[in-house]
Amino acid sequence: MPRSQTPMTRGARVAPRASLALCAVLLALTGRAAAQSRTAEAEQLFRDGKRLMKEGNTAAACGAFAASLELEPAVSTKLNLADCREKNGQLATAWGLFVDVERATRGDAQQAGVYRAAKARAAALETRLSYLTISVPDESRVDGLVVTRNGEVVEEGLWNRALPSDGGDVVVAGRAPGHEEWSTTVTVPAETGKVSVEVPRFKELKQIVTEPEPRQPGAEADANGGAPVDAPGPARGRSSRRWYALAVGGVGVGGLIAGGVLGLQARGLEDEAYELCPSNPCARADEANAKVDRAEQRALYSNISLGVGVAALAGAAILYFTGGDDETPPRTLSAWAAPDQAGIAVLGRF
Image 1 (cartoon, rainbow, N blue to C red):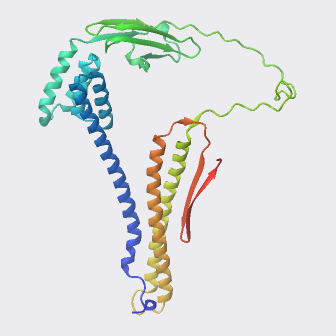
Image 2: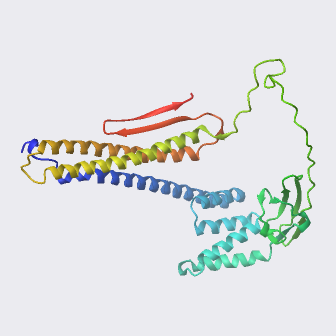
Image 3: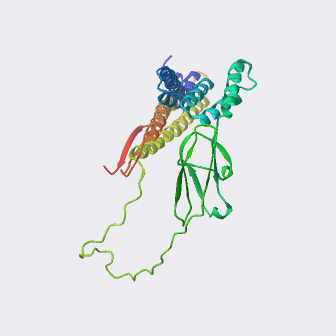
């Protein structure tokens, strides 16, 4: 039958739905690939840890187990890390890991053996632990006081409490606004030690108040009468790569929005075509077919926009998490898609 007599069939409705299906598939594939990559990396690190333990390189083995656990939390990895920390002399850290494993497997019939082993190891270690108490008297508690242990903040609820500590040197420090900073180093015995350190009241910093000098005409110029001195540059912020990530992420969001809008437009044009020609023969077939053509075009651009959007968001995530800090000015990316045109623009300083 000539095309002028038959409008687009109902099968053309697949175009908007295909756009959404493509988006869902791309998102699923991206997430699955990332999960598989993390699993593979975690497994390799776990195997490296086992190998290093056999070779007697305990410190390196602990590092491998810790990295594997961060990528993919697993009871078996935590149990091996606990064993490694104990062999490395970090008794408090090992004890905490064994306790975590015990709690995670409690009541699990399939993990009953792991539960019993972790509970027994934790109980045996608890009798060997050393403890450190960081005492903060009331007179030392100035506003804004922050206490740290080896660089990590000690929450106020942990002050004045005997807490398990690995053996070795521990740096206890404190700071508060308007006061001199303070620090001291204490040595905690490897086993069954009890050490206490008291945080003193910090000395207040002397504040010197000076009257500002009157502003003279031309004060912005330098001493030799040159051009005005430039103001200090902006503080260091996001790196170029992270600026790119934000720009590319914007492109991705725009692509998804544009794809959804174009898909809805395609569906609407298709419905209009069938309202003009509900059956054959149709006196308004030419008008209906014109709407069908426009619907197909919008469906095509919907698929393109959704694909670009998903790819841009995945790329933005990679750029953002691999960026550092510098002062490089960013370039700006933008993208557009329409029934008759689409493209990407790059703007900014080069």
